[in-house]
Image (tube, rainbow, N blue to C red):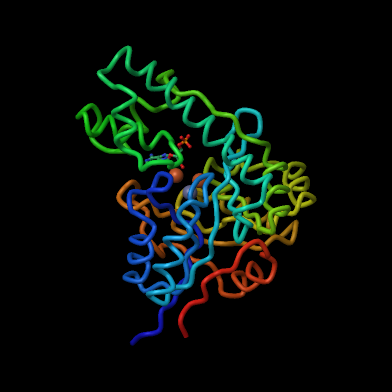
Length: 287
Ligand code: AMP
Ligand code: FE
Ligand code: FE
Ligand code: ZN
C-alpha cells in the first residue's frame, strides 16, 4: 500500500454545517490518501466520538478540534482549537451559549425571509441533524430544497447576502477571549482563514499582538479563501510574531467546492500542535 500522506487540519461534518456524518468525513479522507485530519465543527465537539471510532478503524490520524465563533465588533473571526478538553466547563458553557445564540438568530433570520418567501423554521430544522450547530448554510439548504435558490453558493450570493437585509450577527466572545479559552481548555489556537477578506482587512498588528499574548499558536495561511494579497499579509504577520502557519481544505462535504487535502499542513507544525495540546488525545495514524 502506498503510504498515506497529507495533513488537513480543518474539516466539517453534519454536526455543524458539513453534509456528511463524521465517519464519512474520515472515510473520504482515507479515500483522498491523507494521513491525518482534524475534525473542526463550528462550536461543538459532538462529532469526536464517531470520528475517533472511524479513524481508529481505518488507521487515519485524527486531531480532535473545534472552530470557535468569535467576533471583533462587526466582524466574524473564526478560531480553530485543537486538542481542547471537551469537558472543560468554561468551553462547554461558551460553546453552548454560542450554539443557542446561533439558533435564535437563525429563527429571526428565517422569520424575516418568511415574510417574502415561503420559508418556515421547520424547513430549516429538516436540514440539520439533532443537536447540531445551526448556521446560514442550513437556511441555504432549506432554500435549495424549496427550489428558491439553486445551491448553497447561490443562496449566499442571493437571499443570504448581507445587503439583502435578512441576516444579522449572533453572540460570540471576542477573539482574545476565544484564544484564552482554548488555551485554558488545554487546546492549541489557530486563526482560521485570516486573509479571506484581503490584505487591508487582515487583523491589525495591535490585535494580533493581543492574540499572541492570549496564547495564539498559529495562522491558517494556506486556505482557498485567503486572497493572494491577504495571504501575503498573513505570512508577514506570522514572520513578525513567530507564529506557525497551517494549511487546510475547510471541507464541508458537498456544501462547498473545497476538496479534502487541497491545502495541507507541514508535519513539523503538526508535531508542535501535538506537543502543546493537552486537553484530549489525538488518534495517531497507523504506521
Ligand atoms: P454563519 O456562521 O451562520 O454566519 O455561516 C457562515 C458559514 O457559512 C461558514 O462557516 C461557511 O462554512 C459557510 N459559507 C460561507 N459562505 C459560503 C458560500 N458562499 N457557500 C457555502 N457556504 C458558505
Ligand atoms: Fe462552515
Ligand atoms: Fe470558518
Ligand atoms: Zn470552517
